[in-house]
Structure formats: C-alpha cells, structure tokens
Image (cartoon, rainbow, N blue to C red):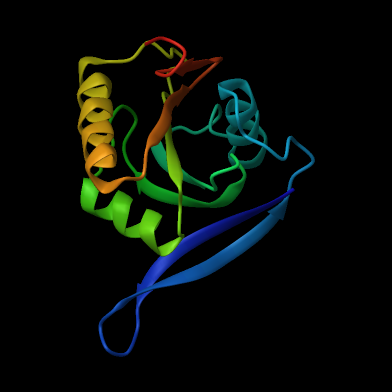
Length: 152
C-alpha cells in the first residue's frame, strides 16, 4: 500500500491548498478496519512508539476503510500536544475523507488515556458527528496501543 503524507499551504490568493509531502511504500494491510492494523501502520511507518515528544496524526479514510492520506496535525512536548477541531476538519475535507482516525503517542510508553485525552476524544467526536465525517477511532500509541473504539 502507498501511504501519502499530506500537508497544507496557502496559495497566492491566501486560500488553503492540499499538498503531497511524500509517499511511503508500506507492506501492511490495505484496509485499516481494525485498531491493530492502524497501530502497526503508525508504529512501522511513523515510529510513533519511539518518538520523544507527543505527535498527533490524522488518518483520512475512504468509505471502504482504505487510507486516503495522513496528516501530522501537531508536534508537542514530552507530555502534551494541542489540536483544534478547525484544523482537523479543514484537512479532512480537503482530502475528501469519508471518516477519520486520530492517533497520538505517549512517549512514556504507557497508553492509559489521561483526563485530557478523554476530553479531546469527546470534543473531536462531537465535531465529527456535526460535520458528517465520523471519527472511527482515536488511538494512543506507546509500548502497545489503546483504542477508544475497542474500549467504549
């Protein structure tokens, strides 16, 4: 499978434009329809289990659970990162996502969600419902993973 990493820039008119930053060949599963498959992709391609600061990624998905593209939404500190729903859904719309998955890492390796993790999950999920772009899962990556979908 090809993993396309996207970003956004402003064009000459000041409008947001989707740009392809890189394409990575990945020998993993074509359909990311299970949290374990998403975890393996994040670990193998982005080495999220080895990062020393928190990163937050969004996977834009087709209706058939195929990966359309990946965005690095934020890069934070050793125990904190911040995201705004506006940036999430701007990028999801530009990528024509039918659904999204968000994922961040815990550099400590521990995947137990914090109070802030639960709060962000609820806020993004509520916004996703309003936008009509379902949040399929939120995954925390560490030594293993935590899936909000599997634990609901």
